[in-house]
Amino acid sequence: MTFRQFAFNNVIRNKRIYLAHFLSSSFSVLVFFVYALLLFHPDLQGELKSTSRTISALATNGMRLSQVIIFIFSFFFCLYSAGTFLQTRKREFGILMMHGMSPRQLRRLVFIENLFIGGASIVTGIAVGLIFTKMILLAIAKLLVIKVGLTFYMPVLAIVTTAAAFVLLFGVVALVTSRIVKAGRLADLFQSDEKPKPEPAPSRLLSVLAIVLILAGYGVVMFYVYRYFHSFWLLFAGVGLVVAGTYFLFTQLSVYALKSLKRRDRVFFKRTNLLVLSQLAYRMKDNATMFFMITIVSAIAFTGIGTVLAMNHPGLKEMENPYAFTYKTDLSVQKEKEVVSRIKKQLDDHGFAYDLNVVHAKRLWGRLVLVKQSEFNALAKTLGLHDTEELADGESLLLPGSLFLATQIKEKKEIVPDSIDLGISETWQKNVTVKQYVPTVILPDGHYTVVVSDRMFETVPEIEDTQLHFNFFYVADWQNTRDVASVLTEEIGRDEFGRFDALVLDWLSDKQTNGLLFIISTMVGVVFFTFAASFLYFRLYADMERDREQYRMIAKMGLLNKELRRIVTRQLLLMFFLPIVMALVHSGVAFIALQHLVDFSVWTNSVLIFLSFIGIQVVYFLLIRWRYLQHMYPKNG
Image (cartoon, rainbow, N blue to C red; front, side, top):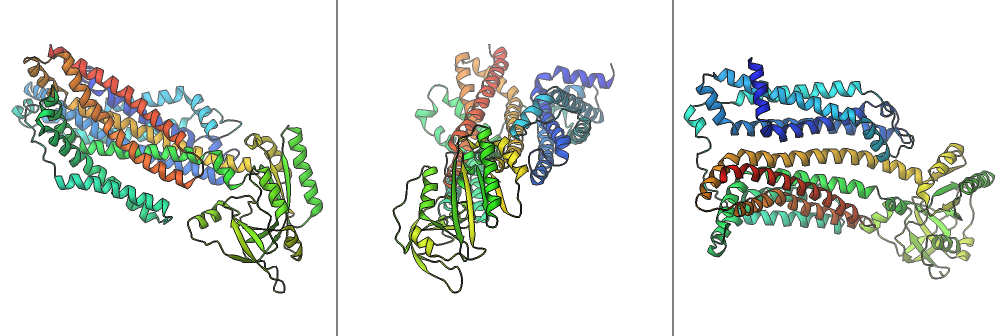
């Protein structure tokens, strides 16, 4: 048997050890391949179908950035997992050295084993990606709202790029891990699992500081949202406080809480709590950094995915512009009639019910557009809003013409004036009082809308270049007007006579942008979540031999299998779900802040994301618990 065959057989014999490492590595290869598949797709090389060059650039840059993130994280993950497994194999290395293996041969053995696992992961990840290429392209086309879909192609460049990247990655990991193998004395290798661990000594001050930092971070984020003091550095400081507090929560507070429970005799000596609490204190101390990383990574994944889904909500676009089609002109009445006729014809031909509202406005000085009350009431009625009270000649209503302007007033960056100067020219000016500010975009022109009585409106002189005609088409099911919008955009477009806007096309453009962000955030988040779950498995396996020996010795004193299951379940519940619970709490605070910024519910998507990840974690917990107990039972009987 050659040395390579010996290394290969070594991997096969230890397949149970390397299974999680192999599957997680294969998954990271698969996700990297999917990004490469999209990055080199012919439909994404130029302008993405049905969208703009900006979104195409976002797609390309986003995919490249995600590949870099996945690659870097995969490197550290593989390095960590390989190092963890080396720690569990010290006894095996001692046996090999006792039979004559030199330190150089030992390093060579570890190097070849890592190459075998890396090669198998590359082949498996790319093969699975190729098998599901068609399904992946269909799913991506649906997320990006590409009606004609993404064409199927043979991703040669994607295969070469993925293979080259991960050959380099696994080669470096194999080289590094082979160099960190220390042969040491045979006695140390054989007794590596028997050395006692020092008792954890948490700090009470740092434990209290953990709670203070987290609550302070939450407070800063809420101040950022509710006090309308929108500074990036303030938000960054709030997130930084939460991250620091989370670190101390796992490294100090969790261990301190367990030690406090151990001091309570009623709790500590009740049934199997002595074993549970004693072991948990060591586990929390040993795995604190890993739990911290899992919490932060999971919170980022939850919040990122939930935010993208919330931004994809059609209600957000309706807040900016409630009309399916808008045609604005200030030059040609004849052209206006022609365009309006075309829009009506297309809507009638496609069977859409609609309401047309015509608004004759006048442009004032500054950022003001003047509208008569009767036409404003007609718009409000179409949108299902209540009519306003009749305005006297010297009164007016003030409305924002965009969400930006509404936000400016909401955040008190602009103040609602008590009166408005209706200045048309230097020779004609008149002041009206602001009776009410209506924080709703009803005339989406980007300017403030001033509503006055019809009689007052007629007294304002008509001057050249101040006349504006708006034609608003309200369609209840505007999300289905894509075909109509495409035809009208080609026929009308933006010409010298006026401006045509289709709400569905603007929404689809935003949806494609958010679809790209969703693809990027979801895949990166799922990879991080998979690695996090694998970290738990690695840590459990690293302590498995020690745990088995402890349980075997305790079993001689009467520990039953039923009690063993209870002990293991309690420990694993805390290890698996404490980081996820903290991540959910952090994400929940972020969603509360997000809910305050938008006027529609984001909790449906949030709850769906939470339940999805919790469901995955529950399945993984049950699987690992079953495997862990199976490993304990044979030596426990």
